View (spheres, rainbow, N blue to C red):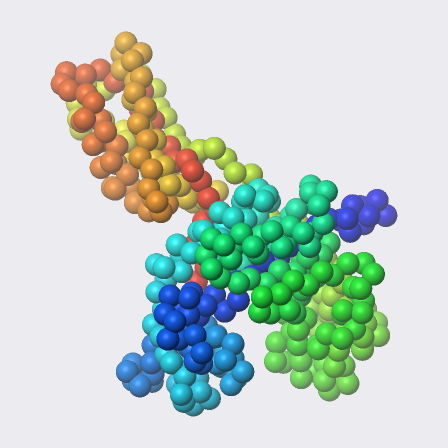
Length: 361
Ligand SMILES: [Mg+2]
């Protein structure tokens, strides 16, 4: 147990988070928005009061506006703010640039959202603070956007750290300053503490981390059930969860050797359809998408043809689209009569699809 603790405590974990991501992108692209309170949402005046705030810049946040708030409420708090419609196609492309940068530093990336990820950089001899500076510099150079990073030996402290020094900051939390950091942390900054828990803690006269740490495990469990356990650990800066990354596979796909050679277009189309279905299932199971579609065709004489189609964006996992592309390649290269022994279809240039599935509203 002691050895295990020493090992997990020596990890180097970063939590990287872009600052007011959508708002920052629009301010970058539209200079007239830069010095105004900006709310990424449909204007409630034009949408009949409907709509939800996707994010707001820091000027709007100072007026009390925050994401997931109704646009109507945001308008009451910030009547002079600019409402700007979200452009998720653009945000997704920027998100891809940012995640590509993460993978330049380590394969151990756990995407959390469009603009947010945990990185395990334990294998670096360089300090976490230095790597954090390099990543922030690379993001700024590539996207002209600022980010905040928390550096620590676990995910909890890294996340608390990135949140602490926003925007455009780095917070390093190590074993020597960890308790000091937690002591000063207001109770609602701890993970999972919502309005209800906050009220209950304040009733117990608990306002910050220092006071939280004075509560016994039994007391916390009696008051908050299983979540009390989490609070007990958080108050001590303890967290053992791993950065959940996926070993980047080279490709995901299927190929089939046929017992009887295929001689008709219909047979080929049918076979590609089945292969594409299987590949889509595998890609979904592994939570990856790919930018390159690879097609393999082998005839009765073992002549083998491979062709690849690379897109700027990952392929949409639509069986009909993939089969159409495969048949195109087939038709361009083979003419009747043919005898096909093997067909294959695979996807490479893979990336995690987790952050692409983050629900936006
Ligand atoms: Mg963010």
